[in-house]
Image (cartoon, rainbow, N blue to C red):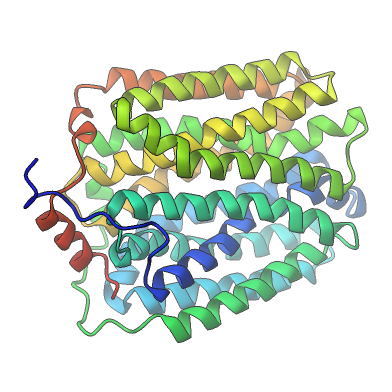
Length: 415
């Protein structure tokens, strides 16, 4: 590749203030995914809810996130990235506060749905904004975004465990306060677009799924996210019969899981894709994750065994998250916000289905069953990637040229 066409590479740490503001807020946004993990047993006990009812806190959140994702590119292309981010943050602040004030599992489920709407507006726009404003190229921007995801998922359980040891309401109020800080940072550090963004069609994300490469990745992501949320949402209940149910202990366990995820997303994923095609990295690591979930099923009676599987699973998740996102961004020539909306809308459905289904499977069959089903789901995701390898061949090519990268900056709706 000639120097005239090579993308400029900069340090991942040398970013504009707006990128760091969005990244910080992304950390807090992703806390919402793992925040309730340590307090799930406490919520079930305090509100006299079944495990399946309690797991619906994930489902309502992720289902609304999934549906809303299809329309976020339409919204952001009309009002701009900054306003979209701020609306998303404001919704999270309001609904997290209301969830903390609730006295029934049904009310919390409803407010988690509103939280999911804010999350969708924020997350889809944040990814495109970080890519557009980053000074280190698309790959560096994606690594920064996935690091924020990993850190948020790690800190979420830790914060949830610490505040949850005081009251199960604490994590909700804590998230609302931190998101308010993120709101202030976006207001002060991110400038408004000097030009009006080009509006996208309301149907654009649905039409995007007509692109074979994007469809393959999205369907694979449904099964992968089923495994992801099996590990995240079911594991706290799997540990309860073994004497691990206090919020702080669960918080520390999932903090380790999130740290493992963040480390591999930042350092291991780029190293692997330097030597192997992206699609090969995906299916290899998906198989390893599937086997880890199966191992958790066999270790169901061992505290140490389950904890080890949770941490090791985090290592594999970090690689998959980064490489899968890179593949999606390279899959089509569509605007990044459209591709992100379409892909995210589909993939979160797998996460929405998993939590209540896993606890139902455990109650109907055996405590190990959810891990076996989750492992099988991730193996299916790997098989989908393998079967679609020819269609996905172009995502293994080198990163975009300088001209293409400039187009990304123009289309990402950020300064």
